[in-house]
Length: 343
Image (tube, rainbow, N blue to C red; front, side):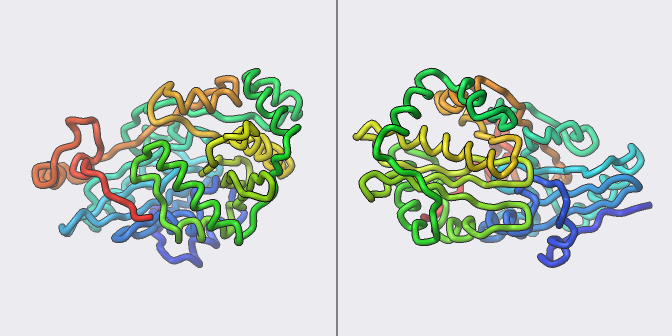
């Protein structure tokens, strides 16, 4: 019987994903970037007759216990297949994974499936699947003129006014990082954002470095030589992902947010990509999601979570010890208390 290979060293991981049509979230560097203290990157790899399975994860220590759990890093992930696997091969892969998980005392597994690749279609082989909300994305294959016709009329008007203004958008350099970080934190403060979104300064430094699967793009908006906005977009092999944006209050009505999104579309299209994924909101059809749909014409994709309890008895014990967030629909329940992230 074929077995999964469990990889945690960068050289082997990078050699396996090189030249594979995978999204940005599958590189060692991306997973490591999103690892917090007590978390370790890993890759599950399975070779079938006509396909290969890739599944990156973070292995997290569960507080002060001997147990661990798995989660896909910030963004999307889960089992992705290049080629095809038979039903038998899927069963072999899952059995190998389950044996490994028991040996390593893995209690739960949480997967954020990728709306663009729709790898939730493999979920019946791997996890329970739960629809969470919709995301939205811009189709980059039509002409720029056709793309802009999908924008809300007010969005088109804002972009026209911005293009006619003194606002300048350019590609950012490493020297612009500190200005972007300050703008991003200010934006999160205004939005009263969760601590989850206050990434460390080192995170931004590492985000700026390219990987085998991702070319980071930092766009900077300047007005009268003052930086008033910035946008991090992650360019993959097929898809661009709008990642982080920060802008000052638009007192001059030059619309830096809308202009940055428009310029990102031009850059991603020039790079030959087919989608610019804007993501979703905090919940279904909230104001953030509605604002993103002003660019996409409500072109919707489904975002699903995969949830597995691998050690049920230990899961119940941990929920009793640390609080059962299942009552608030939080998984895994024992992690229902938020973890603060320092700036």
